[in-house]
Length: 69
Image 1 (spheres, rainbow, N blue to C red):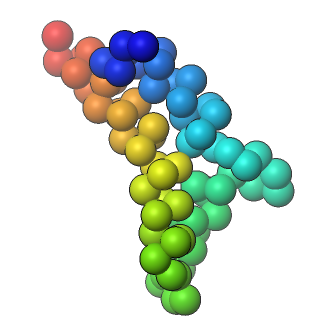
Image 2 (image 1 turned 30 degrees about the horizontal axis):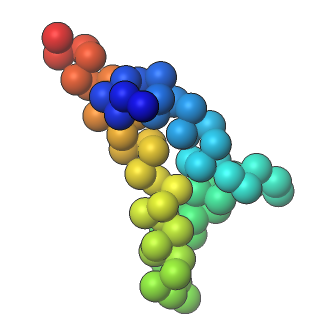
């Protein structure tokens, strides 16, 4: 697996980055919670943000690296 490829990161974003999909993507709920002040967020919630956010950070990084070439 090529972790510099934007396609790999795109697949990871669509799977791990958005899971679970219903009722809303997990990362979306966590981001709304953080923007709302992160009241009551436990360590596990921050770990979820890291876990579900890593593919998105990788995708942005790989796309920026591709644009710079």
